[in-house]
Image (cartoon, rainbow, N blue to C red; front, top):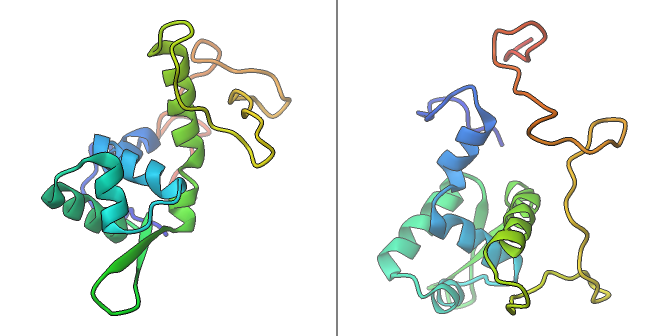
Length: 157
């Protein structure tokens, strides 16, 4: 799903800014996180997050409108089930990156916190951005090529 046409973006040429425009508020990312962890109904999200009904209604509607969640009607026809779309599932790496940053920088040594594990019960490895040769890259070893610079990607090119 491409959301570029007809939308006002904070910084139209920046992928980070566009992503923040879509899911950068506190509640949207926590809804996505909880959907990844099995929440699927309004009640699930409200109980897990302690979020006000009006705010949850607004964020769920926006996430559906943006193609991050999809809905289906539950038996009985009055309630909806929410499920991540492929685009929503693709936010997994973003959520893991935030989790791992939080583990490193927001907890005291030995302070208990939740842990993301694989199906075998093993903690997942630290995310590691790499160049095509498999070498670690950092903010000091990379730069952003702005639109219009030589070699920059341009829509339609």
